[in-house]
Image (cartoon, rainbow, N blue to C red):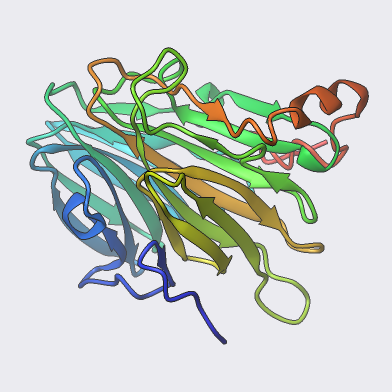
Length: 296
């Protein structure tokens, strides 16, 4: 097995630290705001979490858990895996101490953002997560908007899940958000991947990131489950699901702007692709699932 050696492609296990299978901090990424940790707990296991200057989510990838924070207790049902259903989650404010306990064990993503305001700890029900179907044809994908500006209050953190059926492309046309303009806002972005396995072993996908002459970046990574791709700037996309393997990725974004917003600009060489969707049907496999676990 070979992996990209790009500093922006972090293969599974390469950032493991103690109890975390994945640990990306603003310092390790070389930027100022976005972070992601993936906590693994055995059956009956618990972990203490101090959020410090970051707001944070507890988002099950596999399994369920009980989260205690600021005198509140949140029972998170979770899910079997990221391809089975929309999950519930918990929000942890900055400067908080929390305990995550899992009776049956599991893996839990902790998307985070350096922030200023201290909000209240809250529970996010799975039934309250808007499921958006974007694109058409082989650009069809599903977006679970659990922590976007229009769906859930946070100070800086923006996070969502994208499910791309096998042989489809998402994050397409390529886009960027690295300038302060009417059509962009500056956001650092993390892609965390899971790939549905096939009958004979793990699946693969691909991720492209490329820059401008003024700000170069060049990534074409073969991604597997638990790989991470960092996007400090530049055009990113497509995210490519290979035939036979559904592709999942968790996006984590944050930036310095006073407004918590997601504004993007398409690569002008490829933005015309959106016009072709008007004459194409949505992929009939979507949604892959909803909060009750059932797709079409």
